[in-house]
Length: 394
Image (cartoon, rainbow, N blue to C red; front, side):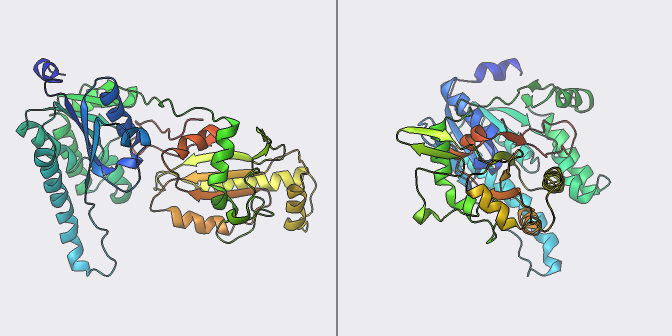
């Protein structure tokens, strides 16, 4: 970071964290805000979209203020085709003006702007202009390269992708400092972009840890209905369970409470958690194929006939019978465009020993779920090959 900008950090006692996205789904930027408030004792303004609730540590910190921008509406399918290109051009322009309004008028002038990239356009342009107008330091946190994400839908040879890359590189080089998530990305930025970046690895905060039996029990009581009512179908998990209105709070799918003590059930399913944005760079077809393979191989090892009824097996499980190979429960968390597509595929699987649940958890329950899991699965593939494909800590 250049000397005079570095010296200026702290003179106003403020920092701005900028995300052109849902702040509740941007944990790294939330952790930046917490670190700036707790460790550097700065007042922090977060400028982002709303949508998902951020962690309570953010909401309860008096030094952190969240300023929510209005999101650009989804383009209606009924919109005439000749108007679509106009809407696509208007979107970055409106986003740019909205960002400038928030960064230059709505929030107090900060010592430093820290902006998440991607998205690059119009974010980097707006933050650079704001930093110039408000005499603030401009820092980019490189999570990935925006042009590679755009290339997933348009192709690497697209003129729009080339133009996007130019903007991303040009304005990225104007930053006073850069952070990135891997050494591979640091090398790429230095060699091919002329940008010197500091690697800042993701570190899970204190609330990411193994959950206690009591925490597990309380969590599974809270999400009982999500576990027991999948898509209106019966499977190895919800067979024999009851709705929350009649649910005995001393017992869950995984735990049982006897007096003051809580125990894990011997015949509980293995809990596998995967976190996703339901985007094309995460192929959940691989996970579905693995589930089918497990179900068939266990049946073969146990010499089960194909005619063996599901209800017979599920009744034995519900009655407490233990098997050499456990049931598998995949809980897939997140929001995104391909969620419904995969939910339709899951409905058609009809597996005996494997079940799936898709859900969105609060920022407080999500770490507890990870801390309760037997295994975490990440199916993220990097569009650039340079960012860290890690979405869970188990």
